[in-house]
Image (cartoon, rainbow, N blue to C red; front, side, top):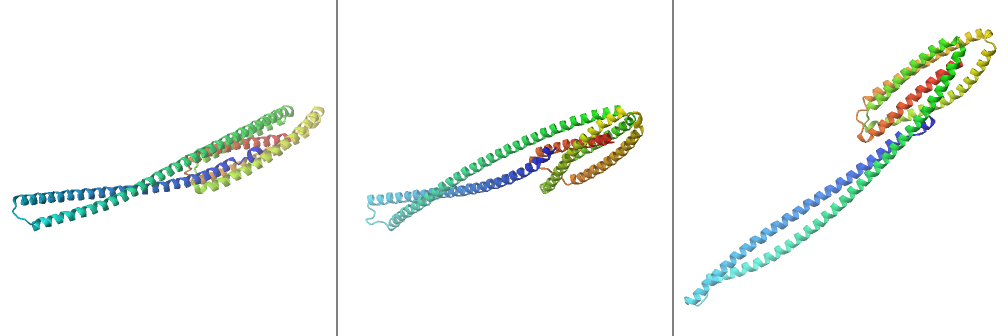
Length: 373
């Protein structure tokens, strides 16, 4: 039991899970930031594409206008040639000269507009290419962030698996210690049965005490199971994790006290065995003259049984108080995070086993008290 008390596994699991949760939230914030940057890059690239499309439309419109002006100039040239051929006039018509000047000016304006539009289109294409490169860089950076997040999640899962294995090892150690306690209890019960067979008048009192012990043990086990069920059914929010840690620390202190009590009980059991051997020799040598002493031992056994009953009542009150406190906490412990569910179940299983171990220790205490009487 001392080994069980020295473990701090559940509290350490909670701390590590909280740290992993904080890291996960930080990584999610980074991924969200990269996603926003990528979205802004998409928007910028879309704007650049729209500008290129608008410039292309302008170039098409200017080209159409240029073609129309060229057609007008061609018609003017044809008209001039026709006039020259027919020799209707020797000088160029003023309208023809004006049309030719307008056509030349239109050509020059069109050339300048086309050059300006070409430069602007090239600039827009350059900006669009730069935006595409930025977008590709953002995508690559986002992919790296997601890969790092997945790697950290895998590491967190591996750490959680190691914690589960540690809890399983602690449970196995607790089971081994509990088996040792059961064997010691069986040995004590065998010694008590031998003492009952030899003590005669004390047999009925010992049987009655045993029945009361079993009743108290059943009540204690039922209370412990109720405590375990109440604790399993209760869930906690992040704000109450500190309260649960304090309860686990108190349970560890209680476990240490029980371990110390068990060590004392083992010492008392050795003394009781020595006294039992001495009483056997006394009964074998002076059976007729020890009737008064047997009556005194009977009265002492009755007193010890009464003390055991009082102690059992005190234990019931303590368990009832603990159950009431846990039920009051149960109204607040409603939403345990899914990530802590497995660790909580393992922790509650350990509590149930510790409760059974407490019941075994108390039963041993009663048996020793009866033997001392």
